[in-house]
Amino acid sequence: MNTDFLNSIIQRQNQQQVVPSNEMIANWAQSLLNLIFPERSASTNHTQEVLQGVFFELKEELQHILRSTKDCHNSREKLIADSFFEVLPEVHRKLNTDLLAIVQGDPAAKSEFEIIRCYPGFFAIAMYRFAHELYLLDVPHIPRIITEAAHSLTGIDIHPAAKIGEYLYIDHGTGLVIGETTIIGNHVKLYQGVTLGALSVDKNQSNTKRHPTIGNHVIIYSGATILGGDTLIGDHSIIGGNVWLTKSIPAGSTVYHQAEVTIKENKKD
Image (tube, rainbow, N blue to C red):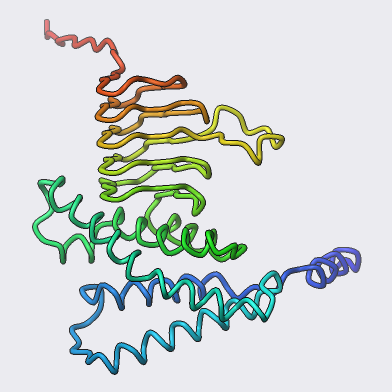
């Protein structure tokens, strides 16, 4: 093997930040989700004492993950873990609003159990909400690893920095993209293939708002693309499928893409 090639690998190895494997971090997040929504696991009858013990173990595991990351100084790892688990009841409450939004909004949903176990949208939202809280605590890398693990499993790409309100309903979800500086209000419905993105990928815009703001009670149907940091979708608006939108619309608007469809009947001689 070429020595220069091997030396380049060794050099990158010496420069790398020590971060636990993506699999370990994703498994921690999924274990937490399985605990707060026991429908995802085999039937168990945990007492309060047992639950306290499992939460303690997950907190210790989070501290270990943080401790193994060079970007997180030892003096902060316990504070971060404590702070995250303090807000966990509020995260659980928000996830229950997302669950309710799907129950009430999807005619195919027969039960909460089905949604918790089967729906990729609920799983992706849960991983985002965990990652977002860690992002707010200035944890590097780990929030993005968690959301990208969900992305790989569901096809739903939510940046952990996005600000998302309660009662979020993602239906199907495959190909959905929610960019870093997106703001989403309450009671929003998003369908597959929706992109909430930026007008430009210029690196100079890294610290600016590049992604749209979505108001409350908005429905965005499949394939719609909404771009730009100044783009505001007013409350109670409906964005139809395949719409391309780069400017703000007032509350109560309906935006749709009008395509011409031709049907030709084939006649035999």
